[in-house]
Amino acid sequence: MTRLIVGSGRLTGGVLPLTAGELHYLRRVRRLRDGALIDVCDGQGARCDGVLQGADLELSSVESLPMPAGPPVELWFAPPKGDRLDWLLEKATELGAAVLRPVLCERSVRAPSADAVERWERIVQAASRQCGCAWEPIVLAPVPLNVSLADRVVEPTDLGLVLAVGGPPLRQVLPTEAPTRLRVLTGPEGGLTDGEVAAAERAGFARCGLGPTILRAETAPLTVLALLRHRFGDLG
Image 1 (spheres, rainbow, N blue to C red):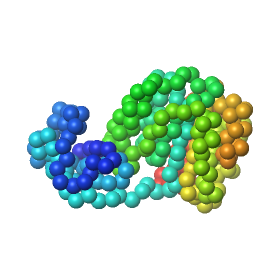
Image 2 (cartoon, rainbow, N blue to C red):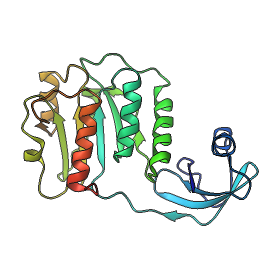
Image 3 (cartoon, rainbow, N blue to C red):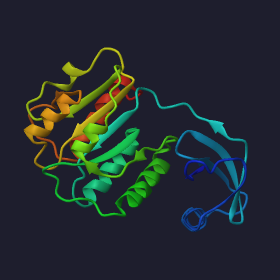
Image 4 (tube, helix red, strand yellow):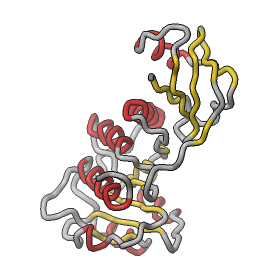
């Protein structure tokens, strides 16, 4: 069955008017005709069946899907250059990140453009549709790392991790019991500076590493996501 993610707040039952982009996807890309059954999600756990009729979907009753297994993971990452960022967003969605928070660090290559978040949301939505994910990551606007650290609300059952070369192995830092929420901070090309790592530690992040090899800016966060999902979620 074809899946369509329509955005939060649009699944209210009855008839759903399709946007031009949605109509193009269903009619031109998927080549569907009237009467086709569509799996419709809002990216935040609500879903229903929809029947394609003209430029609308006739919706069944809406149901709520359970949250993914394991604690939600908020990924703080320094955006890499070019297509590598697109790849990171796509794969982080597939691996179940709950929040994607781009941060600007001292060694960041450049600040994203003003319209970047809208394009990133389209990448995440397409990745969610492809992998069958009912819960779509929330994409935040990029802000300087020091601002993100100052705004962070620390709860006793949270766990923050900051990746740094030479840090203790991740397995030594992870607790036996799953935390309520996980935050993972990874750096740009060239890594986080010593000052940025120290600031993250003062904000409650635990320093850790992924072994002796230096992973690229888009590889390190995905590695951590996979390991955390294996440790606390439903992977493996």
